[in-house]
Image 1 (cartoon, helix red, strand yellow):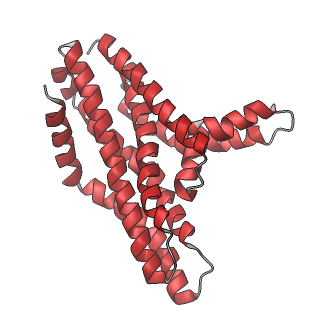
Image 2: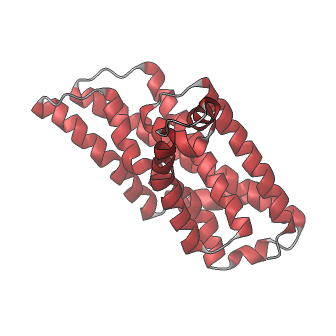
Length: 240
């Protein structure tokens, strides 16, 4: 089993799936609404609102699209055909992580290009660095969450439960942590850790605002590596 063959197969399915394009349209529509209001209704918005509204659906849909290649294998039980040796299991895991990164890249490029053209349509000035920031941030965001749920699937492979966990972790968990951060008795180091070093808290927010700190980049990259290592170790021991 070759990693490149698995990645190419997933990539072909992604690019020919209506879900991919439907998801991208859903991401672009809210941003278009903002651009239209600026261009035609004198809306008081800036370029950053375009990225916010692309991420409104994008932060959830990009993870769902990244999960589809391996959740499809689980639900159809085709995953058992590729897990006959430890080497093949590792290759499968690595291939899926690469696919997850590709999905993040696709959404990042779509977000960057749509922001550029919508900003031009609305007469807004788009900073040059925002072009690559959107792409990089979506790749990091997707790699973190996609690899996290890929690794969780090596422990627990109920597909419906995985998607429920996705919804809760992206939509609800940061809000719960906001409540904790409002507690006056919270230690300063805990506050700093959550805000700057816990990707599960800050990623859904900064992926739309692009107000990334250096600590966000470091902790996101470290989190992806740590989760991937855990996943690679676990998948070798998993009985399929």
